[in-house]
Length: 412
Image: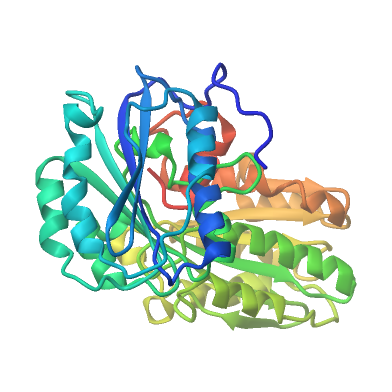
């Protein structure tokens, strides 16, 4: 249930695009996951500026054959499109992706409702390995100026997805249907880099190396530590995690710092989240400067840093206490920043604002909340600032969700 659907208050700029969903409907999907795929498409439609002069949407299912659900110009309102998606039923046989790609070329022609001189986009959603050849059919579409985005679920063949889209940055891979919304960034009212606004605005992929440094001292009880972990997990969920895009590392500290994973330890979202969830606080006292010094080794090529490839380096410190080595904070923070590492300092309850400013180096890079509960509401501001590291002033977006999640899912 998506609630009321309106067509009078679009969320996206007034741009034109003809967008066709090509959706796998084989026996691999199953009824439950098929519903999730339909929900995914409906969410994208809700966030789009639908209309004959703006965005047109069509849908074709495929299994052992193709099944047209509706052409690009068949419906001109969000509610009609969503109703039509809701009526779709699972076909439930084989996965002939190549044949499906070959047959959809006609949907980008005038006879099927496409418009001349309007950007043509195909969004393929699949869960299985194609049982036929895909590369030639996909290239023929791209040669006709059709942009292809591939969304692959757990059983999808990554090589085939890349062959279909033509570029790895046009491929979105998720490990499970249950995390489809999280990975594509469709929770609540927010969208990710994979949205129709992105498709309409000629995206460019950005990358980030992000290291968390979190306070695990004795002043933090287990419940509070879980809130800190939830904050990190929220950032990870909204990021396009892979070796080529966003990488995460993490350090926890009290009297001594400990690395609990390097940037190149995990290349999937689920593995990073599992590592964070399994972590426990250390106890003892708070030596933040020592932890920052320890974090330097995570920003090395041996441990996964891509600084030499001009990938932005970001350090996010989360602390709730007064550091016992305050005198050393300025020196180590300046050194990190001098090496191109952008520091965001987040303070909770007992944290000292002057220490946060020392670490961050400027007021726009530190945050303070009075309670751990307040950390739950800080995520959007932090992610928005992190996004600015990789996109300084290049683009302007109409709302905070666009600026934030276009970055964390791969900046455009």
